[in-house]
Structure formats: structure tokens, C-alpha cells
Image (cartoon, rainbow over all chains, first blue to last red; front, side, top):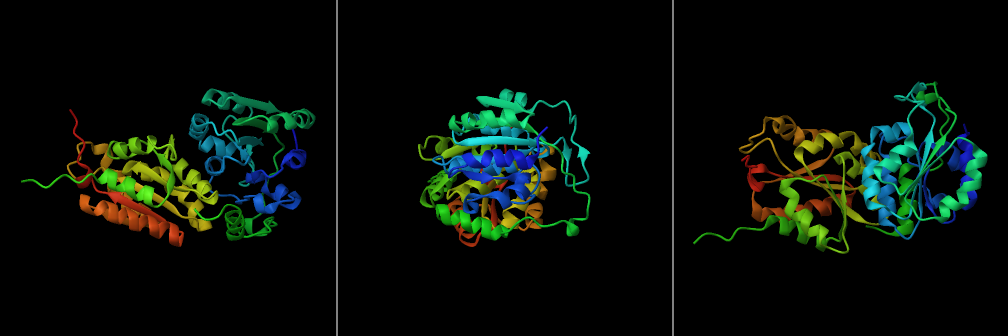
Length: 194
Length: 173
């Protein structure tokens, strides 16, 4: 098991000019990023939407790496998305999974079959050319440079400790430093209007 | 002398071309088949086959953020699969444009199509999507063009419903 913050710290030196969709790791990524204009921290949107969003961004900007930190609850809710991604095989798409085995923002209830799902095997079966799985941070650190040097799409399943939030939503400490509109405007400024 | 039949899928394609659409998401439907085939033939269009229509909302939102314009082609039954996904463009004021071929209305022969077909328009409107409906082939190009402009110029979610009378009831043989 890894800490999400350690995963993101390990990734940070290799980020380059990649576009980063931090997903539910956003609360850790936002304070540590050194290029927030290339980040798309969308908060907690409708479950299942992260993969499609990151994938759409990757298809639109094939010259830039897109790094998505997805979560297992999202993946389970939109499992077909992996097949859709695998068919298109975006070479610039790096699909990381932060698997905490639970719905951390609703009280920590386990996702279905939480302990037994092999997400890397699902990705491989869906058609991803390469799918890896890690439980130890040192192993991930060793392999990260190679993962990001190779063409995508690559799926990387990571077992992370749950960070369960039980307090009322209004009592939670907000981690966003920009509004959703500012996030959109910053990225649109990078690429220009559609 | 009969009037020449208007090729409305071609009229939609011409709009997509004229307005620089490059990302075409779809869950296949017979009503959209000719348009999808035409898009697949283009080297500069990315045609993305989806496993469920909701995927298209995320894909097209990401695409727009990356500077590319796209459309979601689906059947009315697929509208029901998209609804929660519309939270993304709604909450972020990103545009979303979809063209829906209608079932469950004019001369429908499949009762499974009627509940979602008849609810598609109201459900989209309940989510805040601006809905246009087209009944006549000669109006397709104009309405699709205007609806797409509305979506991308004002950052709204907009749907064009192509009526079953327009596309023709599916014949079960």
C-alpha cells in the first residue's frame, strides 16, 4: 500500500509539460504542482467521468502527454471506457489508477469486490497494450521513468491507503486554489478556442 | 415530377465541416449510419465509438478543453445514459453538442423504444440542455448549424432531436 501523496511526489519530477488530470488525488496535487496552468483539477465530478475527460484531452492534443490519476470507483462505474480508450490507443495517454478499495468521500464503504479486483488485468483484457500494478512505492519509483518514456496508452494500477472523509461536506477543508472556471480558462489559454 | 430527396445526413456533415468539427463520438444508430460512415472516411476527423453514450460527454469536454470541437451522435434511448454526465459541462460551462436520432414515436415498431424516446426531450430539458427538434429534411442543415453555433458560442449544452418521421421508422423484416 502507498500514500497518494507519495505517489504524486514520485511522479512530479517527471511531469515535464504533460497535462495532468489529478482526479481524486487533486487535494494532494494542487499544493505541490509547479505548473498549475497545465493541470485540470476538476474536483469531484460525476463518478465515472474522469477517464473519458482525460482521454478526450489526450486525443485533442496528441503532441502532449496526458496523465490521468483515476480511481477505482470511477473506473467501475464506467468500465466500458477502458475498451473505448484501448481501441483508439492514444500514444500520449498515461492512465494511473489510485485504488483505495473504497468510496472515500461517502464514508469509506468498500467498492464491490474491493480486495479481489485485478484492474491491470481488466485493462489488459480491454486491449491496453501495457498494464502494470504496484503496491510498494519503491517499486513504482524505480519504474516511473521508464513508464513515462514509453508510448501509451499505459495503465498503471496503484494500491493506496484510503483517506476517508466523514465530516459534513460543508466542514471539509477546500483544497482548490482556482475556481473551475479559472481552471478551464487557464487550459483554454494554452490551446486556444475550439 | 417528384421533388429530389434531400440528403439530410450530408447536410449535417457539411455543417460539421464548415464549423471545424473534428471529434465525432457515437454509439451507432441506423439513423446516423450514413453520417458516421462519411466521417470515418475523413483523415482529419477522429471517430470514437463508445460503449455507452455517457462516455461521450467526458470525451467531448476534454476535447473542447484541448481546443477541438466535437459532437455526440446517439439514439434517443442513449439519452437516458448521458444524464448524470451532463453535470460536467453544466458545472464548468463547457459547451456540449449532441444530435439525437429519435425512436419511440412515429410508426415505431419496437415497444422498448417508446419510454425513453418519449422522455428524451423533457429529460434533456430538465438537465438544462437547450433542445431543438427537426421534422423536415430541408431544415436539418440550418437547425444543426444554428444549434452548434449556440452551443460553442455561448458555452451551452445543446441537443438537436431528429424526429423519427424525418429519419423514417425502422422496418422490422
